[in-house]
Every structure is written in structure tokens, then in C-alpha cells.
Amino acid sequence: MKVKKAVIPAAGLGTRMLPATKTVPKEMLPMVDKPVIQYIIEEAVAAGIEDILIVTNRAKSAMDDYFDYYPELETRLNQAGKDRELYEVRKAADLANIFYVRQKETKGLGHAIWRAKRFVGDEPFAVLLGDDIMRADKPVTAQLVEAAEKYSASVVGVQKVSTEAISKYSSVKIAPLEQRIFSVLDMNEKPTPEQMFSNYAILGRYVLTPEIFNILENLNPGYGGEIQLTDGLQKLCRRSTMVAVDFEGRRYDTGNLKGFLEATIDFALEHPQTGDWLRQFIQEKAKFI
Ligand code: UTP
Image (cartoon, rainbow, N blue to C red; front, side, top):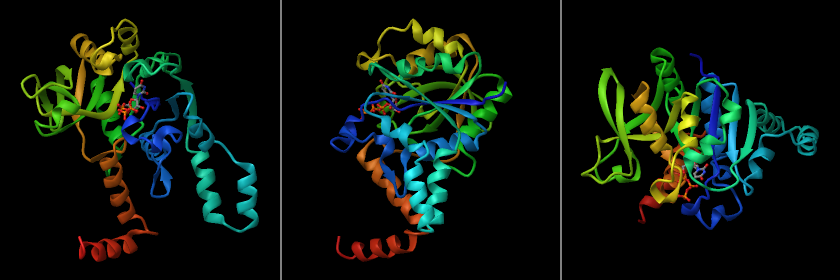
């Protein structure tokens, strides 16, 4: 089993980041000097993915423009000798083979993934949520792909979260297989502490087999009246092998204000153009707050 395709669902309405996301897709918000979506594409590419489908909607065409060439701008940068900027602008457009499909109605994450059926065909594929950035020595998608290939199975990326936080995620019922890898026996979406199976929550990365499409096609709306990916995954793990990888790395949910700011500060502290300056700025600020 080889994973060569990825799907990035990015058709959500981004209501937690309003009003900024009324006309700018949350995936296009700048994370220091690159839009959020670029970090996600770069992670997929670093995991050996060649073809990437972004699920968008009518308000998100800025994404396809971003990954296109821009001859007028490139000519101007070339004439001005702005080689670094020219390189960066071109690099974004040449990262991968990027395809787009629209989710015409915002019917939930499961429905958005289902829109990838034609693109995916008969192959396993990675899923990377469009607003979750991962920082890891080994790309998180690569960690999942490795497990998918080893076990010939679907994979969910998990990490432990607090009992108070689990109600924001899906909790998995697991049995150990090896260091950081588990077999998934069951799962539930946004459980209360009484309902949760474990503190392991699914966090924004998956490798799925095409079996998921038949399941999603026949799924009734679940939590919030939406077609929930977790409901589909629950059925999938009950009928086929599914593995959970307790991935190494830090996840940033850039789809909410605090997560976005945390990521911005951490990334800016590491960035060669802003790191030293920001460290000094924060130290100065800290004296007065
Ligand atoms: P989120 O719930 O994090 O995103 O969905 P959202 O719906 O944009 O956010 P809020 O709650 O309104 O602020 C998880 C992922 O699923 C995608 C989102 O784009 C995000 O990557 N999604 C969600 C879709 O593609 N389509 C949908 O109908 C719903």
C-alpha cells in the first residue's frame, strides 16, 4: 500500500475567526510570512504525497490563485532584482500538483471528504485538515503514512488531551500494538467525560482507504446536523483494521483566535527575520504587563 494522494478539506465557514474570515479564507491568513494552507501542503509534500486535492467553496478562490503563477508580479520582481521574493512566489506555485473541488453546500467534514471520491479513485489517501498546522521533526503525515503502509490499514493521528478538552474532539477506544501505535476498536464524537473512551483524541490527520466513501455516502447527519467524518470512521474501524498513531509533534488549531495567536508567536520566534526582534519585544512588553 502506497500513499500518493492527499485531500485537504478547507470548505468550512470559519465562524470562529469572524469577521476576519468573512471574505478571506481562514486558510489564507498569514502565519508570519506564508498562508496557513502552505504549511499544510508542505507537510503533505514532505510525506511523499504528489497529488493534492483541496476541497473549497465559493468564497475560497484566493487559494487557487495563490498556488498559480502570477506573471506580472514575477516580471516586476525579476526587473527589481528581488530574487528571494521571486523564488518564494514561484516555489508556492510549484509545490505539488494541486487540484480543487467545491463542496457546494457546507454539510460537514464527512461530506467534504466525500467530494474527493473521484479524485481518490481506488487508492489510500491522506487527509490533512486545512486549519491544523503541525510542527514536528518528522512530518506528522509521514508518521501516519508509515503506519498505514506497515499495517495496510486506515490510520488516525491522535494525542492525549485533558478530560475537560475531550468534548471538543473525537475520543478513541484503543488497544496497544507497539510503541505509540494502537489498534482502534471504537470512537465517538465530542463525548462528555462520562462517554469518552480514552483521553486520546483524533487531531486533524488521517490516512483513509477508499472504503470510507461508500460509508459516507450512506451516512445520516450526526452531531450539529452535519455529515460527520467521525461517524464514518466509527463504521470503518468496526469493519476493517484501523490504527491510531500517537504522533510526535505539536498541533496548532489556527481556526480559533487563541490557537492562531499561539502559532503566530511560536513561528515568529523561530523565523530568521523576526525571531531576535520578537524575543526582545516580548521581554520589553513583559515588564509592563
Ligand atoms: P472546523 O469546524 O474546524 O472548521 O472543521 P469550520 O467549520 O470552518 O470552523 P468554524 O467552527 O465555523 O469556526 C474542520 C475541518 O473541516 C472542514 C473545515 O474547513 C476544516 O478544515 N470543513 C468543515 C469542510 O471542508 N466542510 C464543512 O462542511 C465543514
